[in-house]
Image (cartoon, rainbow, N blue to C red; front, side, top):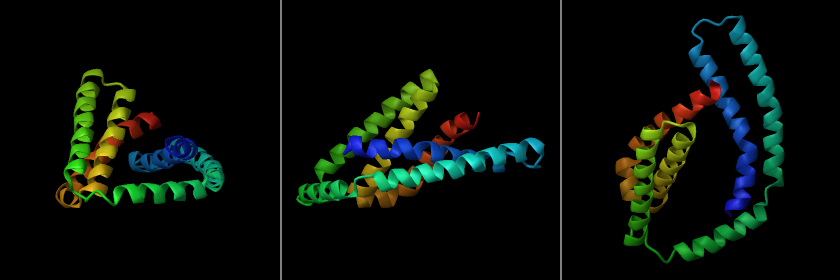
Length: 160
């Protein structure tokens, strides 16, 4: 599953990066000038090409195989109650990952360290969202805000 989805997301990544850059260019240019218009035109052209490539990647993605995996996993997970000790343990593991990667990122301050932290934080939020509805109700909005703020670091780095 990871390999199949990785292929798709590698094709979608540059498209998303360009969309993020377009948005940041709009936000960071209070008064549009010649540089703004050149950069925006370049990014919009790149976005059009990447949108076509992304559409092709989605069409090539093996939807049939993915649906069969979803059925298999649903059959396995429906025997475990949402919010159960097994899911809480998984959430605690994800939180431990976030905590350790946060420590590393604040020490190293590298793009790679912040990216690993961003992925771990996303995994923790998705774990809470999908497997612990009560916790998601309590923490969901704050986790989303934290993830968005942390995601701005690599976004601005990509723009730079």
